[in-house]
Image (tube, rainbow, N blue to C red; front, top):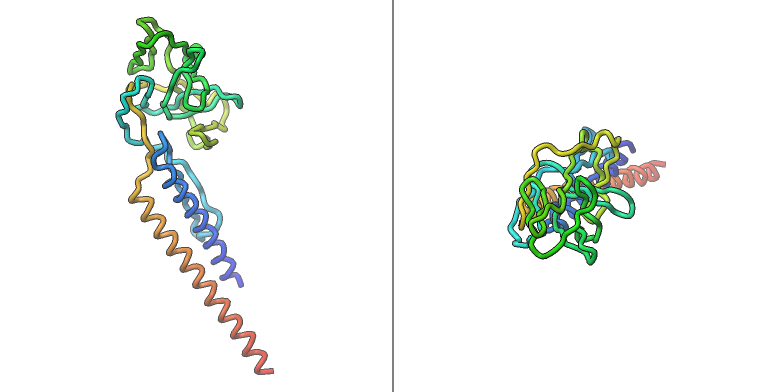
Length: 227
């Protein structure tokens, strides 16, 4: 019976991997999305490890003056009703109060608080300085983490850092591109191959379980005949 339990664990593990790959594919066009990677222990059981691949995605031109792509490691800080969250999605806009916000309507944090935009002419320098009508409106804050593995996805392109506050620090050399956005780091071909492999592994585990079940049934029936 131990063998069939291991097969069940393996099948459930493959199901979990399939769900992860499906989610990656569903977010192939999501700004700055970072794919999840599932790995298994040597026994191929449910004790799998899911990690976030923080490799930067490709940068594409949009022409929108408030779109910002981070070309260096780090995350933007955003003030949400639940507290500060982190993101690499630089699709920004300006709300009715003239505050720089993201697509969720949450303020993008500068090094000295929120960033107030006045007028139509906005230039965002490579280092994150925001120039509005020839005046310095602020500098976009970019942070990095001592332990990036402690970042957890929260949806809406947000990350929560589960480590200690002292593990959050200003990013080193920051380079941004105005009028560009970072894309998803999901590789379509790679993920499709993973999906096919996962489906095959799942089907193999199912067939093996069916064979064991049939063998057990035959043993029970044969034992009944012998009596």
